[in-house]
Amino acid sequence: EKIKVCLIQIFSTKDSTFNADEGTVRMFLRGRPINLYLPTALVDNYSLSRVATAPLAKLRLEWVYGYRGRDCRANLYYLPTGELVYFIAAAVVLYNVEEQQQRHYLGHNDDVKCLAIHPNKLIVATGQCAGHDRREGKAHVRIWNSVSLHTLHVIGLGDFERSICCLSFSKADGGALLCVIDDSSEHNISVWDWQKGEKGQKLAENKSSGDTVVAMEFHPLDKNTIISCGKGHISFWTFENCCLYKKLGIFDHRDKPKYVTCLAFTANGDIVSGDSSGNILIWARGTNVVAKAVRGAHEGPVFSIYTLKDGEVLTGGGKDGRVLQWDAQLTKTEIETLVCQPL
Image (cartoon, rainbow, N blue to C red; front, side, top):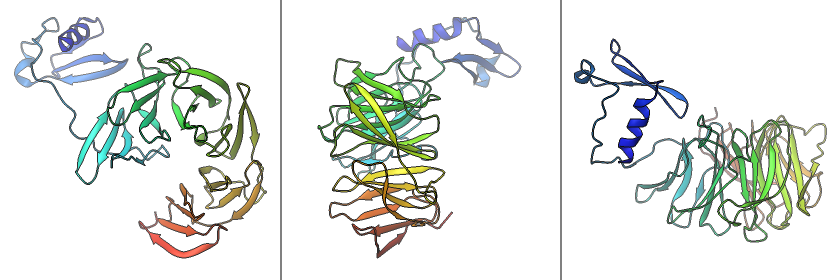
């Protein structure tokens, strides 16, 4: 019945047109013009006013190909269920490599642009861009259970512009808060009590940067500290008394890159950043200045940093195709892997 009603609404609109010469019906789906080609046998007798009976069979999504890595960061995670979680288009994919099976979270109605995992490794937050439908296509964040795929909360409908570019759950307090950065001209940053009702409660908001923001994380030890970075900047935020206060990172004139591309944290709370110049910088906990720099650690941008419990650091994801291991003092070890040919 739902399918039948949908067809009636589509074909009764004055904007739908039938082109007999081309055998197409032109309609608008969520504000976008779509041309549908009719089966040849139906063209001669086709009428826009005729509505066929809805079929008894229903489509079920079986497999999703592809991964959105071209313009998104930090969007591939491993879950305790043994699944990889990532997104492409409006689908979030949970892929069990060993069993070669997929499950899909399909709550979004437009392209998903970012993803965050709660500290309990069970709850997932995903943010989408705004669509063409003014009523249903607003940018928002959906928080859902990765086992049941049940939607828990939908936050920010009407609060965000264009798209959600970064998400992060708080770590030091067990994930009580969610930080969101949208893709508006000022890249607004906001902190939410995401468990407050069905729509959450916004606790604070501020303008982040007029330049592109590519990554943002809550500090794992300091519950009121948030780090964000992007084009030409790294920002250190303090969430206090329902306000967000910012300090910009201070670069040596030799170290300021075109982009700060990724973030990680050491066991003692120092911040490790990678950038488009191939540098790795250490920012001392509680400060906005560089404590140590490894210049030219990679040939080209560093897109991924991972810190191990013993203090060692793995860096890579860049155009040189290498994964490098560093000790706790950021001295390069002899362990190196070439995962792909340099681009």
